[in-house]
Length: 248
Image 1 (cartoon, rainbow, N blue to C red):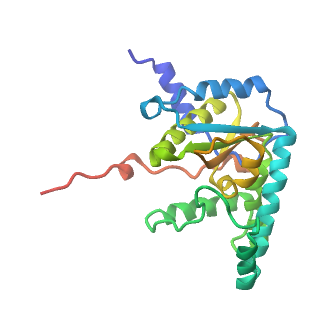
Image 2 (cartoon, rainbow, N blue to C red):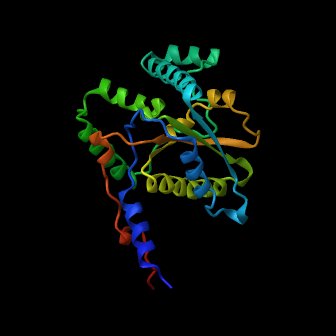
Image 3 (cartoon, rainbow, N blue to C red):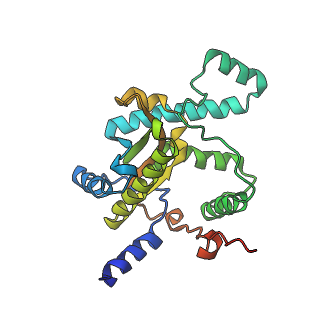
């Protein structure tokens, strides 16, 4: 029997969840984090293998990771502006500015998906009052990724390498479950692929099992009242997602 109240609650949570890009400094109680994770662990996975692991940081540990990741981002930004000689020197010396993530977070988007990506980015910068030609402001906003947007908690998501795309699929289902569980409790989240760019500092801080690869991070905390947190880029209609049947 369908419970219309449950269906309505789920529909509301799905439609009202946002990627939070500015967090309050208010701490999140450990028991609340545990409750979110306890709900998220019920996410389905391939043969119930649950091929993901979570590294959770708050307090001084989080601040230390933030400092290391920001230093790498700043060095990478400087390297990008330095020309070919600087890039070659960085490669030869194995500079920490070079990405050491388990997955390459730098790639070209397919032409089919590029318009939606650009529209989302332009919309976000418009809400933030950042002009398209203001490269300094755009860089500052990008840098916020490695500040975890001010969140008091950050989670790093690792997936088992042998399952390939299917461990990533399972981790995605887990992440949706986690984000909805957090949202249901008044917390906010932002899933960050950018946090997979440098794995070194995270591996130094946590005893990550050898077969697990860093996929992404998730900022977690209480949303601030900043206007950016209401930004809604919308979603494609169902008809756009459906693949048509071949004719004749």
